[in-house]
Length: 590
Image: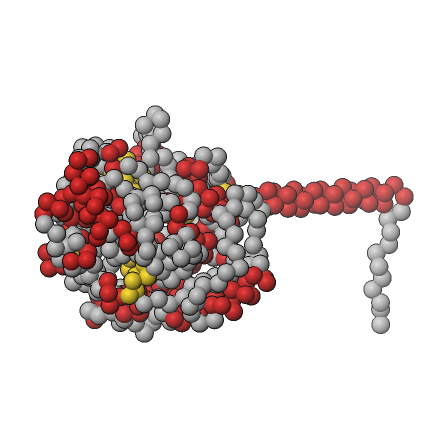
């Protein structure tokens, strides 16, 4: 049997040349590998948000970390309204121009200004979902709306929601006036339901592919590099398609609910999904005409001004927060709210959130008389009426929140308002929320919102006290103060004129309507108009459309939309017309 012999060494000069060539080739290969590794590290490792020194710009455009988990690649964001124009038209429900589909289809053009025209079309699509674009000093619209932040992550610029998406709205004095963006007020035009469903549908659309998206990105002026065009973005498109369809299956509970409409969201059903609580068994409102009371918690976006004074009520404790008062710790309330911006516990940008928390301690609302005059004599006559009927529950005025019942929960049997939001937050959910952020070690903030201390909440449901003790020992961000309540919290009325529609579910369009008995309140009205109505103190709600674009029809007979309660002699609904006028004028000073 012959044994294979190893190759003979090449003798002399020839061998030396071969060894040298091999060394050079090896060095070249190693250099290429190192360069590739260096490029990959340079491209893929940065996790860096676009930052803003000015706190208001940070609030409007700064990241909370949502781009890491749900970030949409920047150029896909810009292209989606055209590539998925059919889906956008469906969810926008009459808020797009009738010829939008036609204009979206004609996207290939070499004409001068074609890229900017496409970007305008993209912005037009997002405006139909209620997002607001500011203008720079030259009058040019920003490329991203307020409430959308950008972060470089895994080699791609990604965008997603931040706090301002739900907490910045617009006001116009007349239909012909420009819209004024007001920070901290509810985003009463942003349709979160439509936004969410647009991307669910778009990710599953036949045109959500590299074949259609890459040409659209180029038409928008994307000018993708060779690596981006043939490697990074095709991979991102495939990943987003998969991720979007998965999210649609996880968050599909909202398909079974009545549409929320602009300025509203389902407060805690997303948290239930995070904790894997099943929803597949729920009835479908669209086909069955009924809902499970525990599965529907639609409520208005709240205002977020003056968080500092909310840290103390008449008994020295913090006010009970959220509409139902289920938590009395500002930090935990903020952490739970920021989940809506797409973050999961590992991805939240705590330092960015610290800046916002610190700023909101003393941030005040815009004054009514910045837009409209106040009849001071009439307001003076309204002050004692306010003190008699409102101050005990809502504070002395718009800046002094002193009041015996301010920040406490009023039982549902007493307040009598729609109970769907209350029933949506269950005892089981309160128990399970104690596991969220449990593994996240606390980080020192450069501008700390303030330590919550070691005090636990009296009546914290389902193991809340034990969880609080554990969290202090662990030094984590664990939620320890969620608890089940049996009513709705009495809130301060700072900036109340900007917080229409009213009640927790936005079922009463104006303060004047809120001072009427339930039977005299509008059963159907229209949401989404930012033209203000100073006579009734709220936004115009009597018009079904303007400039050919429809507003959302709000029907108080639909589950979760009830406008009953907060009525009777103790709530001022039986006051004479002239006294109601005086009380409304005084509330404008808040």
